[in-house]
View 1 (tube, one colour):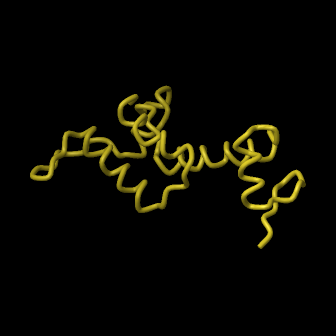
View 2 (view 1 turned 180 degrees about the vertical axis):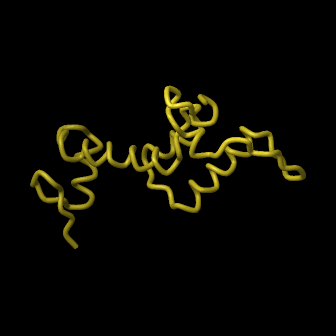
Length: 108
């Protein structure tokens, strides 16, 4: 779990990844988990949705890349709204000329 989820999470913390990319990453994770290769495909005895369930519900506790990426983006949005003194928030607000309201509004 730590190997499968750790590598893409660094990028997902800062960038919204397109659906095609995280679908491909999920596909690679499934192939790794079930031992698939380019030449042979193993039987997948358990659905990916079951594997992504929490451990206490019978899954392996893996998370869908789509869910993880959306969570990281929401965390960044929350920081943008609630922590205006952070350097990266000041840079983003300055770069995109955000107004000073509680929810930043970008003007063209």
